[in-house]
Image 1 (tube, one colour):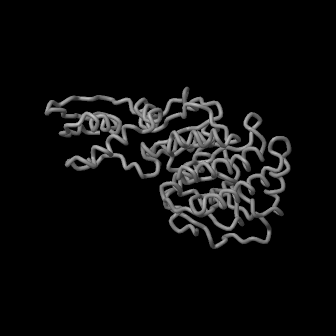
Image 2: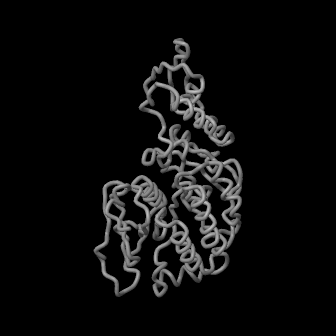
Image 3: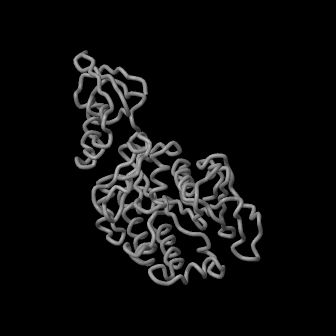
Length: 338
């Protein structure tokens, strides 16, 4: 981005700009320009977490008593995915969580995200991402286990997310279906409610169709996945009960290998749980980020590629009359019914 010259007299405000500018900024303290190049935003962001957002609080106090105007490039702290109110990705170490994180911080989302994992490790520590994408992602420094309500709440209180994406599901290491897809969802929803965050839950197709083959086959896999559809159904109902209208539930179909060729143009959303299909992880991630950007909450949608559309039960019709199409992931949600 081009250099920006700002005449300011407060060192505290200068510190704020150090945190807020993406690449290069020219500051003038006591009318002496100082060049600051390639600011390490990731380190500044970590310090903000550790210090309880002291920088933002200091600037707010100074702004209230100063005559200079707010710069046009200043971060809007109330916006979803802003520096001060990032998007938290629960299950950020899984393949779906990583796809969501990359899309969120990449060209489609251009938002700030905090990845949260049980191990506390950075899921992208050995993966090369574009510089701008990497700068918008911050791993949470500590493990977050959805089975532990206090641990989840403490992580949210520290990071102050505007939106939480629940991309976790049952696994051998992380817990069975009722641990993660039922109880864990409830724990995260309660923590979201307490800190004022909205919740995007990645769930599953056919939860309202227990007589469908999709439901019955998936629900009887056994092992740690046994009765996972029952668990996800319970989790969805907890979200609706706890969150009021501050949620979006996305029900993807089966996950396909490979990546999207045409992005949102290939995707269809539906409502009513009568049609399903498949989509890739990057397409699902696009749908999640589109939902956050559109910001229409209190709704549930099914998501799949148009070319894979299939009736969940023989008596259902294609088309259902509730299909949602758009050329952008954000646009897919414009006509969705709450």
